[in-house]
Length: 344
Image (cartoon, rainbow, N blue to C red; front, side):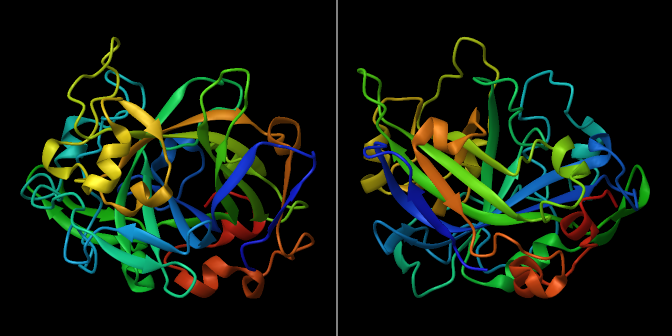
């Protein structure tokens, strides 16, 4: 359906578009559950960003021989288990985190490193993202950060398809296990933008999006439970991988050292000594192991940013033929949440 368009609703909204593209959401039911009927049944929430244009058509990304890029994905990285909040109520059990034979399935994988150029207007680029709390930030709890990280960066749609598949495997403690395929949840258009609010406030970056599917007339059950609004603005902050401190609360332990992104000097220098910094440029997200925070800002883009985000099909029908997600990645699991807004 394309990347849509943005319209400025004020003469000087003080925003600069850094990147435009498609955004896709998926969820995976918990291991050995055939279906999910509530947020409690969800093992993982995934976001896939597909940039298509921006203020710079050529972006910097990790070397294609680093991280998991181009490799067959045999299962979810387990290192994020329980990392989202020390002692949080959404943590998985230790047994679940180590249920794969041999322990951590991502233990031998390093974060993204190196550097090469990619023209996002001419070449496909996908960022496969994991949200630690299995949802987007609660829009009613503004200021509360939600941790996530880039699990995979790739130029191949097949890598995303494999990552979304289900899997059968055996464990020493629980016997045969079944990891169900991910479900298509929502799709739409997104922008990453630079916001300079004035009044001596520092510039920051937003991830804003607007959904195309499920269509407005459909139900919104799993989307509502996982805080995926029809449109939203989220503050986006990159975590400095070289910052060793955990902050006063110590709440974000993050990935293991080996799994963290190793940014090139051109990007690392922008972080300086800060613990968190704006995603400026968005190239930070082109490195596996890039950790970030999302913070709910607003569900009214016009009021907050002086911007209206339009999809190319404002009256889209809930049909498979209208879905870029299905056309691009197929149906590893059910598309019922995407097309009808119901759990499965």
